[in-house]
Amino acid sequence: MTKFKLIHMDTLSCEPIVRRMPNGDLLTICQCGDVKEPAPLNRVYAFRSKDEGKTWSAKELVYPEDGQAVYNTEVMVLNDEVTLFLTLHNGYFDDWKCVMMKSCDSGYTWINAGPPPYLDSYTFVRGQITLKNGAILIPYQQYPLTQEQHEWLKANKTYVWKSGVKIVRAGVIISYDGGKTFEKGGAIDISLERSWVWSEPTIVELSDGSITMLLRMDGTGYLYRSDSFDGGKSWTNPIKTDIPNPNNKVKLLKFNDGRIALLHTPNSSLQGLRSRNPLSVWISKDDLKSWYYKKDLTDFDGCFSYPDGFITTDQKHIMFTVDFNRHDIYFVDHEIED
Image 1 (cartoon, rainbow, N blue to C red):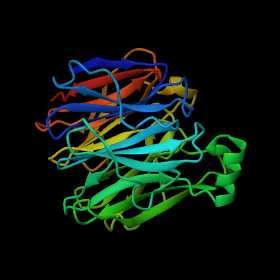
Image 2: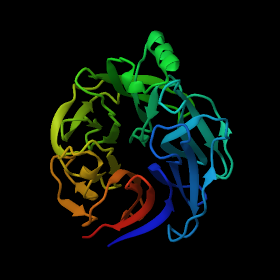
Image 3: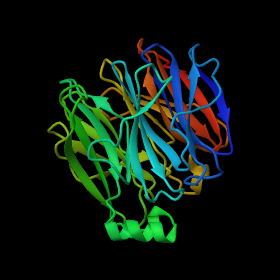
């Protein structure tokens, strides 16, 4: 059974992310405002539910208003600390800075903790995982602009994809002390010569301890895959999978018994946002070799973008958020059908 609940409608809603807070609440963080992204009036808001997603609070700003556009790409919960990874920019994804907002009271108040280690600019931080050995891996996508390209963007007030940057870098940073400190892990460089790529890496640990990264590869109609056999210190060259993808972010989630879920829109069509349909859950019990469970959650038209969430403690539900038609935020509670 699948339940949908509308959280919020706006002129724009993009990339909602829901997490269980240390106090048990559900907190959704989402970019809203303006009519497209990136745009000067994009802002990031929090929405709270105290009743397992049945009702949601009104939006609350999480980054103090200072005239900058704001975008959120990851919500990390480690013990009693919640970290938002935000992008601050001028409305065009240039003059792009990265900052962490941290909360020790389940998202009621936030402090600016500065940039993420090694990822202070032109970077989207993605979904953190903890390995069986306790190491914490945080994947990212980074556009390594030269200073000249950065200054050209600022002067011309145009979009980052016009900067001339040659690659997007997909990699990880790694902590071996519970998140107190991080070091650079391995990364792969993806060429932007053919077309712009929003790689949006999502990672999962397999049963043998290796790590798989799935990548959005715009313009191909399919996800690509890279693997690490040394805890994230190096990665194989990405190869095309048989998983359809219409230029959309996907999310890997791992059950306690080793099964792996994929939240996505399995469609190889490349006809813009309308190809982001249906919204689906796939589950593998053999380390992504096959999918024994494929469930389409929608049977109606519309654009479902950027699903992201978690598996409940009882391992029976996947709770996640998704933006619909780029202006509605929905909370989804999918009960796994045996």
